[in-house]
Length: 141
Image (cartoon, rainbow, N blue to C red; front, side):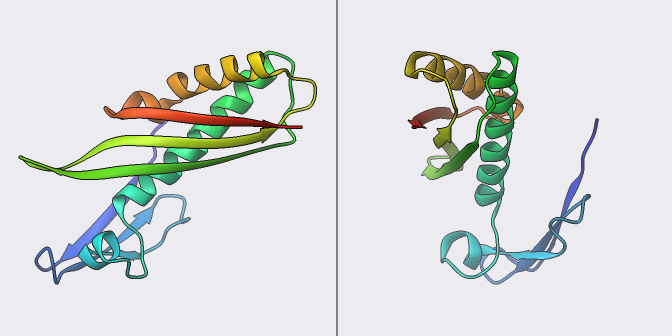
């Protein structure tokens, strides 16, 4: 399976602007630029998109692993916080922190923690990222 996304850019770094699109059409010419990445202007940015991909991937991996163990979640909510830091050789994504809250009938805390840890390591986006990935997982009753 191969999926595509594309970016178009015009101009220099600070005054330039671009758009991001995905093969599925979920994103179609969404604006991004220096101002959306560093100044909070409306639009998207690469780190936000990585966070969305990681949160979605983790949630699906967790659901799959739960199913393999006979559990069906009522809900899984995951937030990914992507850290972008300036380093001596430029900027780098240095970490992703996942915060997940789930409602899963019949599971105990130890099993929940074990499966969540496996999902964190096994999610394809986790495997892609060369960053410190942390997880706070909360089981709701």
